[in-house]
View 1 (spheres, rainbow, N blue to C red):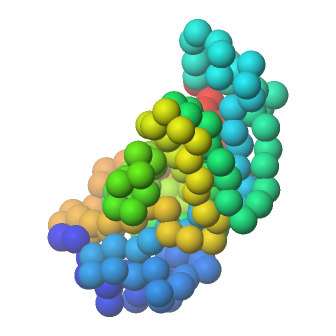
View 2: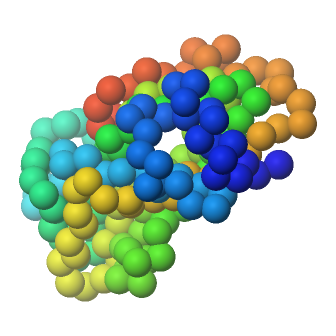
Length: 176
C-alpha cells in the first residue's frame, strides 16, 4: 500500500523524517530537500575515460557550499538531503525526480531507502544536457514515495549491517 500524506505525517511525527516540513508533503509522497553542500567532479576526473566505483576517492571531487550549484554539461554532482530518515521495518521508500528539474534535463537518482535504513540521503544529480545546469539548495529535489508492506521483510537493511547505515554526509561508493 502506498502511504497517503496523512499517514506519512503520522510516521514523521514518530521520527521517520527529521526535520519534517509539512509543506514537503504531496498526496502520496514527500519532497526531499537538497542541502547546500555538493561534491562536483574535478575537471581532470571528468576527462578520465573510466569511472571506477572501486576507486573513486574524494580527491576526485571539489566540495562546494552555496545557495545553488552549477553542474557541468553531461556530468553529475553528489549532494545530500537536509532530512535524516529512519525507515521503519514495514516501509520501503522509492525516490523519483521532480518534474521541474526533469524538464530541464536534470535527473536525480536515489536508491531505495530500505526497511530499517537510516541516515542522510546521498543524492546523485545528473545533468543530461550540453549546457551547465543550476540546482538550488533548500528546495525539493526528489520525491520520496512511501510504501507499507503487508508483511514484514525477513532481513532488513539494519539486519544486513548495510554499509551506508547511519550516514551523516555525502557518502562516496564503497565496493570491495
